[in-house]
Amino acid sequence: MTALYKTDSTKRDRLKEFYYQIKDCRLCELYKTRINFVFGSGNSNAPIVFAGEAPGRNEDLQGKPFVGQAGKLLDELLLFIGFNRNDVFIANVLKCRPPENRDPSTIEINKCKNYLFKQIEIISPMIICTLGRYSTQLILNTSANISKLRGKIFKIGKSIVLPINHPAAALYTPSKLQVLREDFKKIRDIFDNYEHPENVGEITEVYGLERIYKARADSAVAGEAEAGETLV
Image 1 (cartoon, rainbow, N blue to C red):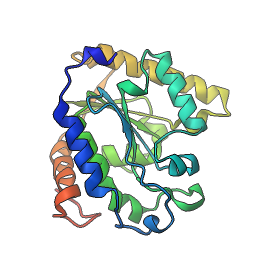
Image 2: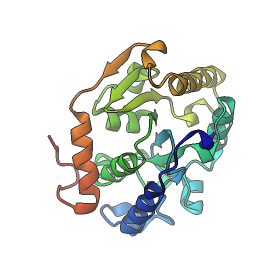
Image 3: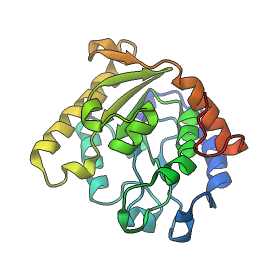
């Protein structure tokens, strides 16, 4: 699958440089309890970026995203549509595990969010697939519930954004697993119809966010804006 894409070696170098710039982050209190800083992993030239919520116990131990049961399901779903982990990039809104796997706090998200924006800027994917509430609300700059947004197709700049449920929600519920499988089929359809995504479904173009995200990505390194500041 990766042979289909033109390799840009500078992306790998930029991601590696960015990792070393932020791996010792202490912007929030989570650094005190983490075992590993979970930067993200995958193909620096990925056409698809999957954005999750936060590392869990297994991710914290191994330093890689989605390595637990939800990760195994994600791998199965990727294979289901003809991809594997080497074809995509996977990251989370938070890079450190919240204790007891609790939900991310607003403060933690605001401190960490620019890192994800920087990763997306470097990779410049065709598709951003947000997994669950937190990444969906962050990427689309909305407070709307994931149930209202799931499966809808958005466009920000050159990237198509598809919000879907987090794989963890489908682990023990067959009906949710079927919905997730259908959403992954849509990912494949969008990929195959990237030049004409309207062939897959109605597109909602979100104007203005690309400029905001560029500013947030820049501040991830430059420190020009306080975490949580509205950059408009």
